[in-house]
Length: 120
Image: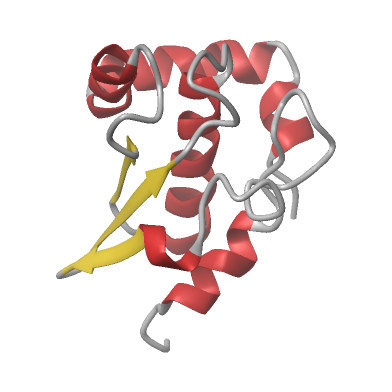
């Protein structure tokens, strides 16, 4: 298996769609190549919601994390770009808290959003 690089992750993220717009998180510039870093085996992603009051901010972060962890099998840390959202601290804590993250994924799956927004 080859070592993951940024281009591999960009290709995965091209198939992660914003819940409100029919565009990927790459097309909307929610995540760019400069927002991807590696810390050993861990992947770190900074993302910028479509607006500072974006009601889907936490959902978008969870979709990014889910897609990358599912497709790569690696641990992925997803956080908001500093100063990009009015509820940055709360959303970052939710994405880091395993139980809150899993609960959100279950709600997204039950609502059909996970399958709609993360495609193969």
